[in-house]
Image 1: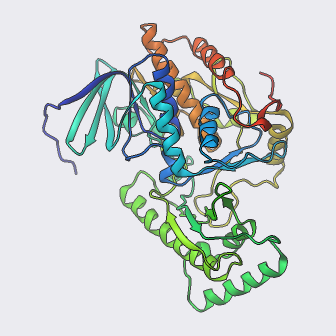
Image 2: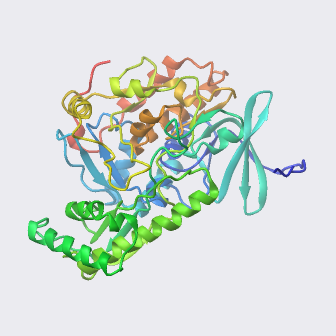
Image 3: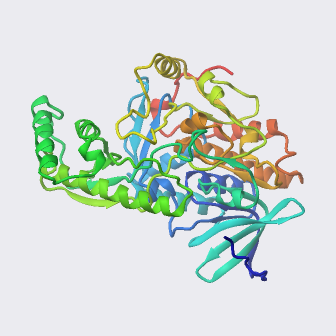
Amino acid sequence: MHIREPARDLPVLGEYDVVVCGGGPAGCAAGVASARRGARTLLVEREGFLGGATVAQLVVVVLSTNGVDFQGIWHEYARGLKERDGIRELTGAGSGQLRSSVDPETVKFVWDELLTEAGAEILHHAWASTCVVEDGRARGVIVETKAGRRAIRAKRVIDCTADGVVAAASGVGWDQGDGERPWAMALTKVFRMGGVTRPDDWPNAAAMAKLEADLTVAIERGDYDAPVVVEKRRLLNYIRGWHWELPERRRETLSVISRVLEVDPLDPFDLTRAEREGREQAWQAADFMRRYVPGMEDAHLLDTSAHIGVRSSRRLHGLATVTSEDAWRFRKTPDEIARSSWNIDVWPAASYSAPAVPYGEAEYKERIRRMRDEGEYFSIPYGCVVASGLDNLLMAGRCISAEHEAEASLRIQQTCMATGQAAGTAAAMSIERDTTPRELDASAVAGRLRVDRDAVRPAFECLEGLPVADD
């Protein structure tokens, strides 16, 4: 059943060279890159703050296998966080897992600062829904605001909505799921605990044995019924590792224990179910930790993420597609605009305990060894950020043109920032050269990005001199 909307004239809020839809890691990087090249740039964001998943989904973790995927604007972002004491020191160089975490509140200020310094404008509380299309070209976007439905004129549009909302509504093709089902990965409701003190001898066998016994009794008594708690192994594993601590000065910890299964993230009712189920999982896990885990006797649940964490939804069709085989074989391309060197990190959509990365399997071991020892990565070519079938439309972030397993690697935030920087640079360059992004010389974009990124000093000393695989 459908309802036909009546045609109507929309007020125009403004005219720009480039409109970026979505103010997450990809969108913010796109806005900075575009504005720096002199394009009059507007970033449209549905929330009242910038940062996207880092803030709204509490994805504050920083992860890389070898550091070669930290490029350009990421270093500026990380340096801004360091100056505000909003990021932990990056650790694990040479170990096969670099790791850190950020303060989500500081993230908002750093992106505000970077975009303002670049000269970009920002529009909050506006939901970009589709493109204004004329003669097969994007000429702007339609946004939903508190004042009503409005239009924004633009020469180029960049979809950084993570779900590919704008491109899909404008007729660009897309894929979803694992090839058989609409869910590609599990969803996670992240939560933070405050007032925690990690014991010096943690973990120790005696404490973990007592925790398992306490958990068993509590479940049998009926205190908990959330699957991730009842399953026990997942909860205990995360407690054993204490999981993610936020910047050192804070007595906080963050957890991704929640795992909500078989969710179609594009189905409004299914997504609502996931939010509620994830929040219940987080509440029960936090309650057990507060009651039974040493060091959390005086802890409290600080918050759960405003939005449940979605790892994959639409994968838009572009002029090129990075394939799963590209990811496994570390393929390089001459028109590389970003690098991905994270694991093939597929959080199973149908299991509460199956690992996201089966580290014990031979092919995963060898892949991780090559990334760790040889600085291996796979290229994301320029065509992956240029929409197929509609001119003047680019995309960045996890919704770019990629197959399922490739997306499971490149969805990491520093790679999203790299694709955002590429899309913003290409949008501005195409205007400068009076051509469409489709017709723009891909090698020129790649070359410009190399120059811009080489001019940025690494944010952490441990990233200097790390091995990088040859092309």
